[in-house]
Every structure is written in C-alpha cells, then in structure tokens.
Image (cartoon, rainbow, N blue to C red; front, top):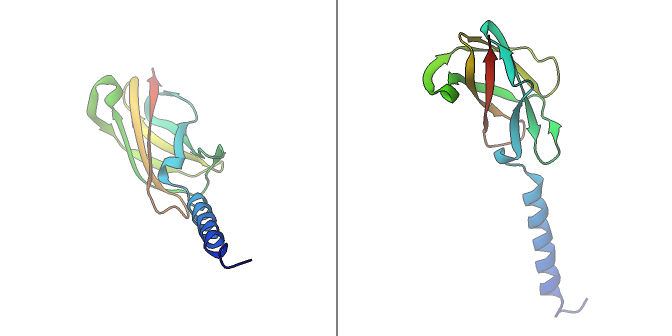
Length: 133
C-alpha cells in the first residue's frame, strides 16, 4: 500500500468499526411487551401474561428483571382506579406472568418497566387488555 492510500484505508477501517459497534448494542426501543391474551376474566385472582420480544429478531427475551408495574383503568377514562400487581413465577422463557385484582369488567392498561441483561436503558411498555365479566 502506498502512503497516499493510507489515510483512506484508515478512515474506512474506522468507519467499519464505528458501524459495527453501534449495531452491536440494542436500545430500549428495540424491545416490546406484548399481551399473551388480550382478554382476561375479571376478579381478585386474574392472571395477565406479557411476552417481552426483541423487535429486531422477533424472539422472546428471557431473564429480564421486572421492577415496576402499574394496572389502571385508563382505557375506560378512570386512570386513578388502580390495583395491585403481583409477579408470578415464569413458566416459559420470555413470558412474564402477573396476578392482579381486576375488580370490574372493562378496559385496563398494564404498564411495565424491566431491565434486560446487557441493556443499559430501562425497557418500558404498556398494553391494554379487556377484563371480561
């Protein structure tokens, strides 16, 4: 290689390294919570399951640490009506299960925040489900 081509080769190598490094890390926006079932029977032992998916690959994301949840009736105009949410043991990789007291039939919003291994940002999402009588 002659000296005139060296700066161009170095710049190309640097650009390749930057491009590969930026593509190696996902961002919180690359993940999505999805309801396993959008309809749940209302009551004090209602179970809700969400799947955490890597949107780039479509694969479930196991072993995330869910640390914040909120269940409210915002879809029916009652955001201040909240209820407790209890984490349940996982039965399937990438599927996170919860028990909640869905005291009345109607629309419920479930907000979730989790840490994904190797991801510095918090992954947040919300899903809307329907509690049936």
